Length: 404
Ligand code: PMP
Image 1 (tube, helix red, strand yellow):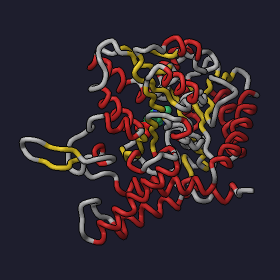
Image 2 (cartoon, rainbow, N blue to C red):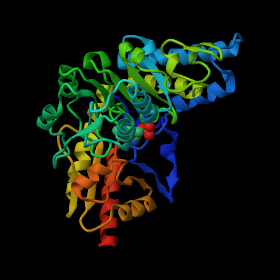
Image 3 (cartoon, rainbow, N blue to C red):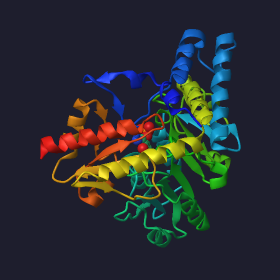
Image 4 (cartoon, rainbow, N blue to C red):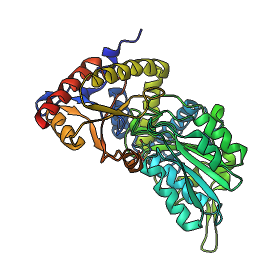
């Protein structure tokens, strides 16, 4: 039996007060908090071995390189990639998606089709729209239903031999829906299309196995899984990464440079131009080690308890509506109070020390579908407690009374 109280004590920020009240942090779908174990790794890097990597002969550079490459191996094993060089370290999910979208500009032709879902974060929509503008490819959308689930029959009908790429999130950050990515991948492959899965919201809660999924690209951000901001990953199957051209030009990504011709480095360096976020990469590895020591099965079971408890308690409040599915979801409750703007509720909750997100959660098409300006989103992590949910319930009741 895990001692969740002890685990919570790993997070120093959870001891602070906000507006004079103990912080209740329910904005984990925007970013997670950082445990002392990861903070220590960051302090150790800048205190003891800060140096640029890959090109130094001196000891500090060697040490930093070894630790950075060790982190890449940790990420490889976490996602069960076949090779470490299939893990590209990026600044986060957004950059990973842009890297792939940039590469596909040289692979797509006019009237090719690419498929997105109605449940996406803007960062898994806009780069593809830009790609379509550049290439003349057509963007098709898998529709959603009132339960916040994808219409899989429509998906089957959208697929054809014109489909070149499908990009869908594993779990929706706005509603928490777990999408049937196994089926999505299999059906896309049946027509010869590649698949990119946006794992930004899934990776804090589940441990994806990219080989078992047989996915072509999988992307994530460290900051949503107890790591620092400004670092993330792109997993790509070796054959796909070899097909894509480099993303940015610069140092580190070259083999030979002359004014007549430059040749590029092999994987993963071909996609890693310039000095990377060295400390961030190392801390990303430390964050994965931290979460794996707790265990993703334990995290999922505990977070389900929180989700079920939070859902039940919130629904006790009259006039409160929860958006999206009640099954097949993780750690997100998106809701509104009848006749009250979500922003007003969020502002009052903040005065009580409760951090939730209000608005469209970078997923405007979902809000348009429900014809609402936004929602109040409480998103949980394994360091939250039922007592904090009770505080949220009291807060929402109070806000409702004040705003009605
Ligand atoms: N996709 C999803 C599903 C997300 O939740 C997020 C972050 N909230 C992103 C993409 C973008 O991630 P980042 O801002 O870290 O690049």
